[in-house]
Image (cartoon, rainbow, N blue to C red; front, side, top):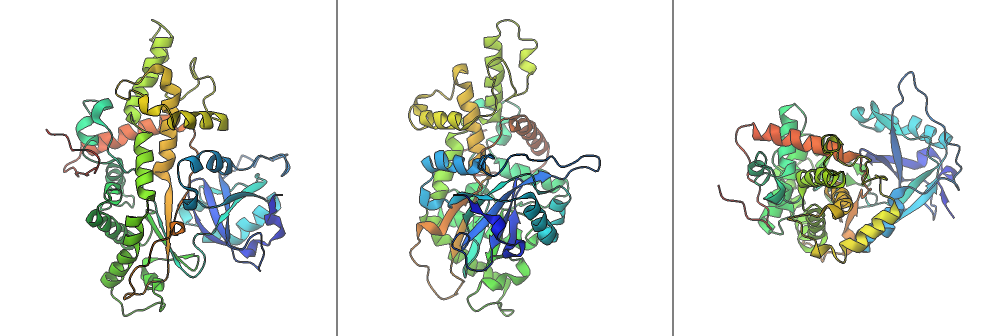
Length: 439
């Protein structure tokens, strides 16, 4: 039986945070076995223009399918990430009227740049009920690690090889964002966090903290929650077991924070798992994938290559009639990935494997864009870290990506690489699993 959020009141829910696709509320209402210790994750929609109207949804709760993230986690993600590191997900019913009341009550709490672009999708009749990882008398730290590897130079062009094999995608993108005036993390490098090296992981945490404080929490690679509330740097001492302490220095607080986070990140297998998945699912880079796409079109269409190579990557074509993968596609893909994938020749990818490589890249993007939640007790400066429990670190935001995004990603990759390559000094990012090529 589907849980009913409509049996609760909108003020029983507290706004927590949001990403590009969903918005999250935590349950703070009276004791209820269905909702205690849960968060409500709702899909968002672009705000309608003045001359448009909100489409109606004639489907009832029983007819509307569950949010795809539920089935995707159960049938796909749980085959790749240990279940003890994943939140519980289940479907929950909502209504247009209830969602509109939720918007009216909570929309002012959302970031301004989000409010002008999108809102809760009021046409939906179902949301997702998940484990509340930020509520309770503990500190929750959300980290968005991003890309944890350098691409293999095999499939990079002469124009990009020198740049992309030395500087990671995140650091290049951050530099481009900074040049156009956006808040960006210019210190933090994901390759440090994924390195499995104690000193480099410590550097990554310090860089995340410094960016968080300097940007007043606007750069989203680090978020900190206390008692379910996202805090800003000016009240960071709320993380202490003694509560807010104006006497403690920022430097000392950073050190206490780092010492609390370090043992968990060093002992958990989660970062290693994510790094392996990101890297193994993206052996071609978007450049190699695009080249395979056009090669496959040419081979299937014989000598008539003047038109077909211009079809954008991932679009419907003679060899890709149904572009967006369904759950059957994903389960078949994982069957291959977990069995015969090791026998694929990634240096010379076969056109017959194009569909596989497309899905692999989409899944890699899911793990590049996910977040981890680390939970620990309120900070006590003199108390040593205890044995780490698996449930202290969870992986969230594991939505499947759409094939249509490949065109955008290919264009963005070109823009980032060209912008970074034309700049001055270039940062050297060290991939612990790759040697930096010699000049």
